[in-house]
Image 1 (cartoon, rainbow, N blue to C red):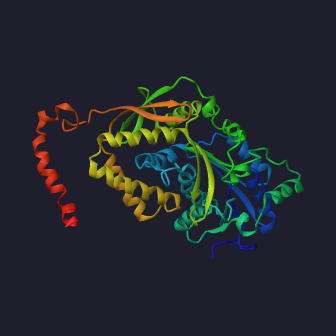
Image 2: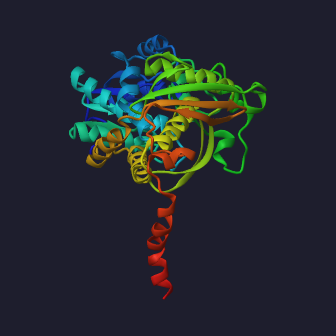
Length: 405
């Protein structure tokens, strides 16, 4: 098995967030495995002071504390394809965490090989999805790499982690005491506390914690009474401008997050079907994906031929399913993505979205790619013969008539 046991390894690279779980693991791995620990923190736009995170790792005894700015790579290689694919797992979840995991694991393998680490450690639980996404990617890229998952392998609890920190004389990190939180620029996920029971409504504390990442966030009922219209322009299915101003995709996402958060847009509260088949209540806040994917879908309805549009629904669903299940490097994902990118060629246009008290509704769309064979009273002027409809209907209904005998 690829799981490292004490005595197997001498240098461990820990995926480090700066929170309680991974902070305690720096101390725990050094003691339990008698091994050196280096840390890796990958910046996907989570909004934390990563210099402080790096400093904390060194204070806890890390041999090296490595921080990689991967925001641009995350957006270009993972978020952009997801926009093209209307990436929503089961039509709901924009997969902020799921999209980030393969990139984090890729960077972990690169860094581990560079610094000579013989194992990679993470803080994922034994019931969740992220252990699958991270470890499947690591093993795909380096099948000989050892992995340490303390929460899974040794049932390391948060209570024990707090005791470890205190035992070594370190202050317990004061972050997200109530919830387990994961964040990047594509969204935030909350788990724990009252959210563990699907029968409970989310408390106001969730929304207060959201402001740590989206300072402009308002609950829908507290959002402005006046709606706001935002216009997103797409080129080949990718956003290139917001309200007439061209900007990088990273900047556009950040700005849409800010505007959407102000109007309480992007709250996703549902019961999710996990990789292993069990279910759990998930709570996400994702303003930018909610608005951008809504607009992208609307532009597809405007421009894509009916047969292609119908087929792309199936491609999108399967693409998201593969990403969620940690199969980024699967040949099927690559094949589907090629088809999806081809379908997005020429998907140029502008969509106006109205934001109001938690909702994001497309209200207008335009494109220079609309052909003369479109809709409206002038169809007859370009060869649409309404009298031909009767013959079409006669043939179209034939199969049903045959079935009726």
